[in-house]
Image 1 (tube, rainbow, N blue to C red):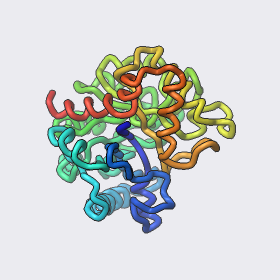
Image 2: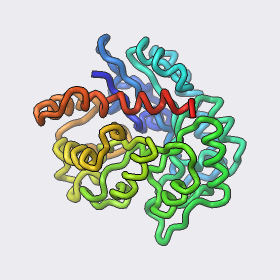
Image 3: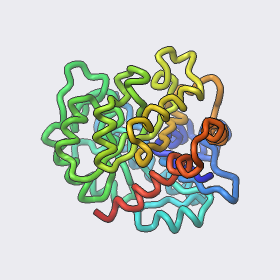
Length: 309
């Protein structure tokens, strides 16, 4: 069972807590099964309360950190879709470098190309509040993309960087759907119909991502899984998977766990939960071919082909 996880905050913790990506204190565990391959997207989270200069400095610190950590722990840091399949099959552990919050750009359009040259494969446009790109999901009376934000979308697509709309306001989502010429993703977002949280996707939003050939990663944060976060469990993960599949998401669905960033349900504590989820899906009569799509193949195919418009 290969695994491709679109989102975690382990890199941010590694920097701010001066720890290794392989620390036993992290929720993300490196794959130790020689028969399994795992690709983890390591996001550098940029808190909304940082200044633009602070955000940009944190990005460059993260860039240095992930290169060192990948070399130290023999993780293949994959920087292009063309190299993806070969490196993924060659290494037990692979990684993408991603950004959570376009505030990292510090309002500099030239940073899109610069960040792409440093291996960034995907960027969440906002976190919860406003930045120079547009408004996040927690902004009251939000606007959509700014003029700078529209320029960012064009530059990201030119530089083969995937647009991620997790954390986007509805207005921002609509503007991205209008402006984007390439498929885009929601790296770590669940179903609003199942759990009515503003960070989750409406059926219409999911359908747009699906029809564009994008991806939606199931998030394990308890408040996005269940209306009563304290009661969230693995069962809720299955509920969100079932719902999105009923919307035709067989080729769209994957995982975006939010390990080391979200609050996990009480019945698991780290990324070893994937083995249990796999068994639950089998017990629920999911075909193994569908499980493989959700666990890895959908994301692998998307990123492998993204560099070839």
